[in-house]
Image 1: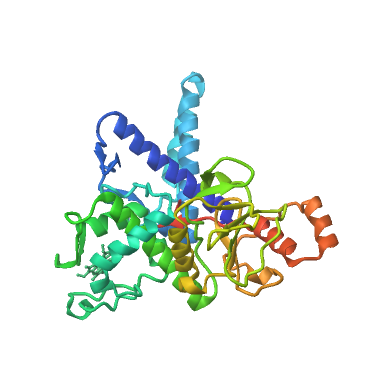
Image 2: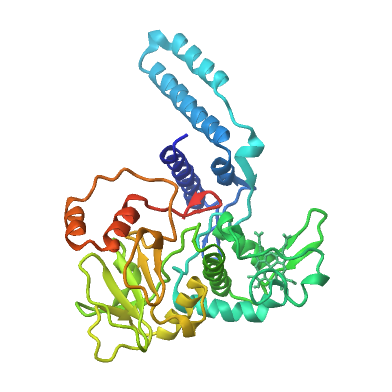
Length: 391
Ligand code: HEC
C-alpha cells in the first residue's frame, strides 16, 4: 500500500473515531473529563497495527470499500424496486467476501483519555516547568538522563523503560497522560509505576510529557545524528520588526530559521526565503527580523534540550523549520554553508513536487547549499504519527 493511501486511511479512521466521540458527547454519553470529552468505550482503533502491518492495513481498506459498496447497493434498492433482489444479493455477497480484519488487530484496549490531545502547544515555558516537575517527581526512577536508571530503579518490580528512544512517539498523547496520572500495573496487577494524579495538576502532567519529548529529541540527535521522529519548533511569543507581537505558531506557513546569537557569532543577514528568528542574548543594536518576546531563558533551555547540548554551547547553532512547523535541519556553530546533509529530520516519502522555478533560478544564481536544502525539505514533508494516528 502506498504511503499516501495509508496516510489517508489513518486520517480517515482518526476523523471517524473523533467524530464518534463528538457524537457521543453530544448525546451525553461522553462526559467531560480533564477538559475534553472522555472516550467512553473500552476499545479504540489500533492505528499502530496499521502502520506496522501492511497486509492488515490492506485488509482494512478493502473491507471498508466492500462495506461502502454494500451500503450503496442497499441504498439503490430503495428507489430501484425492481432490482431489489439482485442488489441485496450483491450487497450480501460483497459483505461475505470482504477480507474482514481480525478484531484483535483492529482494536486495542482504550482508557478514558485515549483520544485526548495535549493542550499545551509544546510551549517553551511549559517544557521548562515540565523539567522541574520531572526532577521532583520522576527522576528517582527514570534517572536524570531519562534512561531509566534512577536511584530507586533497581528496587522496582520492573525496570523503568528508556524514555529517550522512539517509545514516546509510539504512544498516544492521551494514553501517556493516563498512565502517568493513574500509574501502571503489570499483567498480574502489581503496580509498576505509581500514579501522580494526587500530586500534580493536569497541566503539569501535560508539561512533563512535553519535557520528556523535548529531552528525548535531543538525546536522539546526540546518539544518531538525526531526528528520526518529527520534532516541533517549541512554541514561544515572538516579536518581529515588521509588526505586532505574535506567537511562533503564527509563523506556520513560512519557513523559519532559528539562530542562537552570542559572543563571537557573526550576525545573520535577512534572507527572503525564510523568517529569521534570533534567540540567545537579547540583541542590542543588531537589527534582527524576529526575536523571542520575553521568556528568552526558557527558549534557550528548550532549544538546548531538543539539540541535546548544554545551554552554554548554544551560541552559533541554527535550526531550519519547515512550513508545517517541524524542525528539519540543524547547523552547528561555525557553519558557513548549508548542504542537504544538514537535513536531520527526513521522511521516507519523497513527493515529486514540481520544481519551483523561482527557487531553481535563485539556486543557480546563488549557488548556496541552502537552496538545495530548502528544495529537499519542501519536496519531502514529514508528518507526525503518535501511536499510528496523525498529530
Ligand atoms: C517509582 C518509580 C517511578 C516513578 C516515580 C515514575 N515512574 Fe514512570 N515508570 C516507572 C516504571 C517501572 C515504568 C514501566 C512500567 C510498565 O511498563 O509497566 C514507567 C513507565 C513510564 C512511562 C512509559 C509509559 C508507556 O506507555 O510505556 C512514562 C512515559 C513514564 N513512566 C513517565 C513518568 C513520569 C512523567 C513520571 C513523573 C511524573 C514518572 N514516570 C514517575 C517507574 C516510575
